[in-house]
Length: 122
Image 1 (tube, helix red, strand yellow):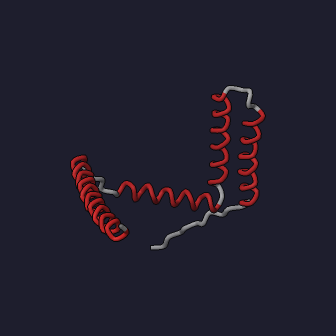
Image 2 (cartoon, one colour):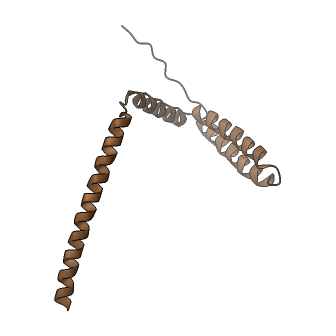
């Protein structure tokens, strides 16, 4: 069994990153320049420019590596066994009970040591 894997060749990565920086800079300058326009149009323009920047960045080696990490994280997220609503409620109540008990113990200790310190000091 032979696996014929082809490695993707990333060419002109530096130029692509320069294009990403230029698109982001154009968005910043354009948003400032068109400040008199409606916020809706400026927001839509920024969303389009962000999409273009992300698309170009994903064509680079580092961008593809980040996309692989995100894909792997999503696969792992699907494997998670999430607690039921009842389990979540029970765990929350246990945590609240422990916090309340711990705070009462700390309050009693603080009161006790405060009483001792005030007795010693006078």
